[in-house]
Each structure stands twice: as C-alpha cells, then as structure tokens.
Image (cartoon, rainbow, N blue to C red; front, top):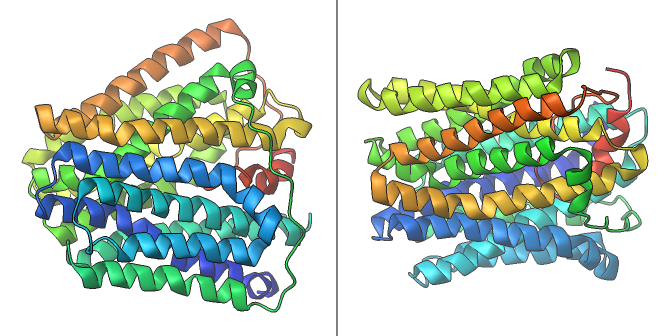
Length: 407
C-alpha cells in the first residue's frame, strides 16, 4: 500500500492518459467512417499516430534535459489536448493526420517522463512491485479506453472534448505532486544494428508484433463496422483483444522461461494464424463469435512482442540492455507506422478478411524464419521473461535489472 501511495500521482496520470489517448484511435476510425473518409485515409491516421510516437520517443529525453520533467510533461500533454480539440474544427483527413501525430507525440513524451520518474524513485526492493502495479494500471487504462468508445458518439465535438478533458486531467496529479523532480537520465543511444547482431529473430518478432497489434487497434473499428458490429459492439470487440492479451502474459511468461523461447514464439505465431482464420470464419456465426475470436487473437498475438524482447536480451550483456530496448522499440515503431495504412488498403480492395490474411502471412514468415534460426544456433537463456510495455525508449531502464534475476 505504501508503494501505491508513494507513486499515486504517477499511476493516476498513467490511467487518465491511457483513457484519453487509448480512446482516440477507435474514435477517429469510427468518426472517419461516418464523415466519408476512405479506408486508406483512416489507415493513414493510424500510421500518423505512430510517426508522432516515434518522434516523441526520440525527442522527449532531450526535452526533459532542457526544461525538466514537469514542464516536458505539460508540453506533451498540451500537444495531445490540442490535437483532440482541433478534430471537429477542421474536417480533413490530412489535418487529422497531423492531429494524430500530436497524439502520438503526447503518448511517447508523457510515458518517457513517467518512466524516467519511476526509474529515479524505485529501489531494488520496490522495483518488482512498482513495475507490476505500473503494468496493471497501464493495461487497465487501455481496456477501459476501448469500452469508453461505446458511449462516445463518432464525429461529435463533445466526444473529443471528453477525451481532451481526460488528457488535461492527466496533467494535474504529476504537476501538483510535492515530490521533488528527479535528475534527468541520459537518453539511450539509438543503435538499430544492435538487436540485428544479437538476435535477428527477435527483430522479426517485434516487426510482426507491430503489424498485428497496430493493424488491429487502428483499423479494427473499420473491420468491425464492415462485418456489421454496432459502435458499442466495436468497443467490446477491441476490449476483448486487450483482455485476451492481458490474460496471456502470465502463462506465456511461464512457458517462455521453461522452454526454448524460439519454440514459444513459433507456436504463438502458428496459433495467431489459426486465430486469424477462425476470426474470418466467425463473421458468419454472429456477434458473440466475433467477440470470442478477438479475445483469442489477443491471447495469441499480444505476448509475441515480450517473448521477442526476452529472446533478444538472452544474447545481450547487462550493459547493453537499455540500448537494446530502445532499438527494439525503434523497430516496433517502424512496423507500426507501415501496418495500419497497408491493412486499410487491403480492406478497401479485398474486403474485411484481407487484414487477417495480411497478419497471417506475416506470422507464417515468422514461423519459417524461427525454424531456420533454430537450426543456426542452440538456445541460450540467462534472463527472465518480462512483460514489456511498448511505451518509450526508456522502458529498458525499468526492466533491465528484473531480467537478470533468476527465473
């Protein structure tokens, strides 16, 4: 309880931030459909979010070093709120793409500040509990954000205003806390070649995880509407995906620590292909069938990022952990930038099943590559499986020491 109280301001800011920024993606997709945006234009909005996210990941540590944690957090929150409020003032896909870049910038910047603050305050004794609470709060906020879409009317100023209010509210706990601001950590060097030299399979896994997750979360509302779901059902559809991913973390972590992680990765990808096929077939068996397959898809695809990251860390020295985590986040951002636009083009050209055919093809390639890598070298493990949030380049600082504990 003391831990929760001591970090209450940070955790409350995370929850409010997730409610705001987690809700804008599906709301934009549904609003774009009601305003006559093409499927490709809606895909561009998702890609723009991750472009802003990448810029924020790179820029945030440097801005913190210049103006401090609280002011940097305020600046990024303001960018997110402005992007939300401006939506219904300018009805244009191009303008909305710029606004979504502001939302992505807000997410990356705010999480960088929060994680830097957490890193400075936790000790070896409290790190595990702090990270566990952090993950629960973050995942709970993401789940609630999807459900929030069920009560927000698309293409409505009030809906965007509510999200903007939540974004601004996230500013209050952190800026009003009486705790002293920590010293600014140095920004990790971005070394994209590091994970490629340590584990090419991990990089492939991260890219495929980005394709699966960003396609589903950014273009999923388009898929839902195409198969006949109502707005509140689309909210449940997206929430089922997040819930499945959350519940999968512990059992998959146990398997990843007990068996060869490459085998776990291969079986997860094979299961995702199966889940994608069932999802396509479930269009004909009603709403509950579609919901169940979304849960199954999250259950199989969501943990792939964390398994890939854990596999990469098995071949990395402790001194390289932060830079490795930053480089893997870089690859995730690259995959997430390209995926929503590609998925939307395929849906527009070939119909709703095309998104899951794209995802299945990517996972099939990952299975083949995983089998080839298993023949290239023996398994190696000296780190624990850790659920890795895809939040900022600084997340490696929080998880690094946990990885070196015995499983």
